[in-house]
Length: 386
Ligand SMILES: *Cc1c(COP(=O)(O)O)cnc(C)c1O
Image 1: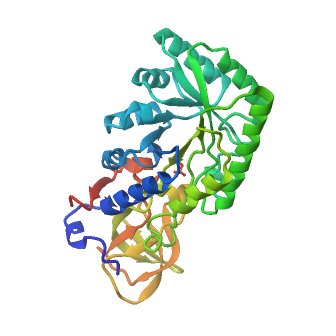
Image 2: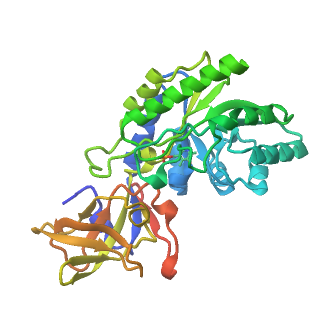
Image 3: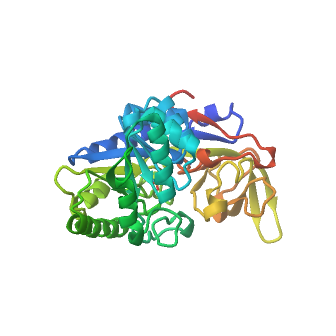
């Protein structure tokens, strides 16, 4: 039985809810910041989309990290949390005029642009405001992250970024714009990457590209942004509670050839917040089918969609039983066959009212919750105030 959870307090709270271990969150953020600071010019921008809960954003701000946003709403959330505009970068293939305008008015650090029509839209809106704004080109490096197809973003077939063949044209268009300053190149190859080989492959693509730009166009840009993507160990949340940030930053320091004075930006999401969150749920019924035994819990795919959407694995623990193990499918109440958290797992014999913790749910959990079946959005509780 896992004793790190305040079960007595849980018993007075309506389930399901997210529970955040704030000590682990702060230690994770501090470790990442400390490891990055060992290298000159390394900067971390927290990928807000992983979890935009205000308490999480506040912890991010306290550690002095910047923010990586993919919508106007996220830019606003970062600003509201007190993250200063000059540490905010804004990516996304479909930035609307309204979103661009709000980011320009806030004076964010940089737009990561993904197409020529977007460049034109930012130029027009910046010109109307008579401001000059920084842009970086999001380049599609055609590097495959060995991860789930839906979270691979750096292949030629993906909608993200500018392909190599179009790069010259995009640079020309930006250079013809009076209100845009090209300051960097941006990359992001995908998510939940646990082998450093994918990041090493990205480094060599960037090295090639930097040499080409330098030789063919005499361009050296002051900023390189390598995105995020560092994974977490969903199979062992307690043994690997803090990801190996030392190895991650060291990999970039070793394999990426930065030019003199060049700043390196990282956009980490999952690795910073994934392990600190759990979805806490009660068992509503134990149902014995003809071939299966189901633990039907009161959390559903609307509270945590990753298993249904990506086939993702989350470790599940029974917090209130230490009986002999039996085999269960852990399922939610939503009227969809995909509302399954885990199939055929061994759990201590379970009764109605038992508490389960669905672990490693701090990233892309609460942030992706939705209201299908008229279900209320899950609430959140924190280890320091529960
Ligand atoms: C989602 C995203 C990230 C963060 O990815 P993680 O896998 O959570 O680290 C970083 N940059 C961009 C552009 C993204 O879309």
